[in-house]
Length: 266
Image (cartoon, rainbow, N blue to C red; front, side, top):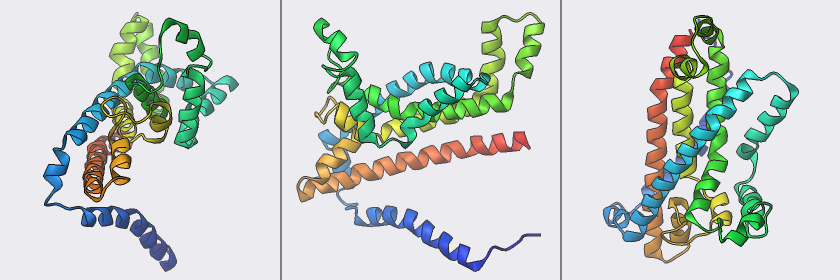
């Protein structure tokens, strides 16, 4: 038997849905579809898109290298320190992006804690493509850590313990037992991290700047075009639609995996 909700909740849900859907619809209606192919094929658009894809892929790879070990340490630890580390790990999720960019600048800038140590060697990180990757990793890493930590806690350590009693070493257990068990969480976390890195704006703008071909990713290119001429605003709308389409593809891609995980759990 399905219990019906109070009618006021349906009305509020409709308003909430409209708040989420109508802005996207307005953007699609505003788009000049006749000039859409030309806007997408413009050199500055392709340059920004290529840079975004490359840096997002690099940031996602860095998230995997650093995030998987961090997630497993958090999942297997029960100490008070793990709670503190979990708060520190998820903090970028709630920080304003500009604050994250400022923090990175104070860490890796020419006068920063680490930047001042590497500056005499001629190494400069801010306002470079590497700075874009670091900023994207900073904001995307928590998504991967949370996904894998949840998967690790759900899987438990039972199968790993059995493998250990049968004589499997740590690395063999890791590759043959742990990684397959983390598969759904690993995949969803990877895709979410890539999507978050692709849409990063605030930390990148402050820490990496907005240099064409070097640090101007798609979000920065959209911002630059939208504040330009009327023709440039058409390019901004076209690039925004591309990012929306990519985000939609991410959600469509993740849904079968989440559904499969739910069925397995049940």
